[in-house]
Image (cartoon, rainbow, N blue to C red; front, side):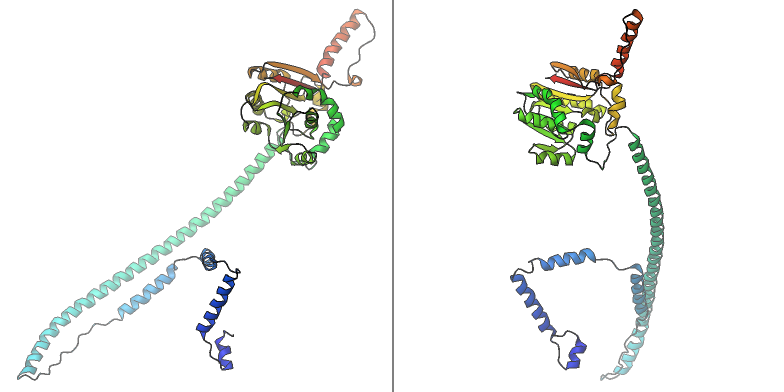
Length: 404
């Protein structure tokens, strides 16, 4: 049915608005019963409308115009008195009425004069209040706008300063050795390139894995590609892996390993005291900050039950060879951890037995060669070469095996 009144008049048909509204309500109710409309449709629409439009006060200019209009109407109000009819049917009544009329008129005129004067004073006072309010509003608006402009300028300056500081912080952060990097290459590929394939690592750590027989459950922190976890599983040792790299987690889960995302110190803090039988960290502790290294040993002592073990391997900073060939290859390394410092930490944490095992010897082809001959001078030179060789070409890694 057309709703345009012009269209209705053109066709000669009158539009029954109540009928149209009733039909619309019936259609809406039918759709609501069929489930097309929710029961709270109107309330929801009202809420959205209020949120979009809201109830806003009228502007100051509009209120001022309305006030001026009211004052004009008030000024146009006139005051008059009704004439007293002097007609009377009593003898001499007209004379009496005239006399009373003149007397009352003088009194009424005085009252009307006072009323008009008071009305003018009220109108004038209201006009003054309107002007004052308008002036205050204009001054307030001007000051507020000026303050907003000043705030925008200051905010823009502060945004520029914050951006500058963020850039400086980011630049400083990126200059710190060992700062975490967001690499576009995969950690799996990095490990394969610099440390070898999975078979090589399984062979390398097979003996270390046996340290955890009868020590379970074991947590492998920073499990990498999961070779150590696979060795423990084959030995029948229950092991759970924790690793921050999502790509490595996905790969490990695809091979059936029990792993989750997490970080060393934060994860250990979440565990119950004495709930672990073993903790393993292979080439991980050099990625931790000095404070986290200290915290790790303390947490390991708390979370391991008596007889539990910690096995960790890391780069050997006592061998200068590692600085040229191993340690600084990984941009995520923070700093090397000296074996003597770790031994000290485990002793202070009251571990009952601490063993240091030096691993990954440098190839003989890269070591210093002794001089031929057996004379005293040659023997002395060769002894010095051995001392230099021990410093330059010591074992590339070391393992700490600590028993609670």
